[in-house]
Image (cartoon, rainbow, N blue to C red; front, side, top):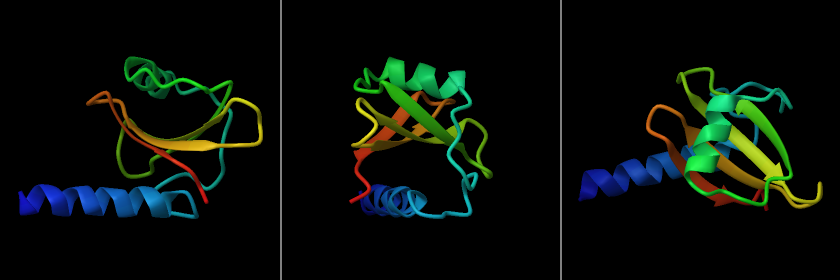
Length: 94
């Protein structure tokens, strides 16, 4: 149980730091459509994403940081893993 909690805390810290300037992800957000990430969001019933932007992981194949917004003003952030079809989030930047 301690290992599971430690792992969760570590992943949470990485995710929170990732919304800033983490060296684990591409520097800039891109509108380039990563279908793998879209499949994971759909698989996990993530909605409210009228506009989506991505940062691809530089370390892990199939991992993406995703931000989406229904209105262009309020953004919601997710960490997405294609190989396991898992999503961590939602997070807000504030």
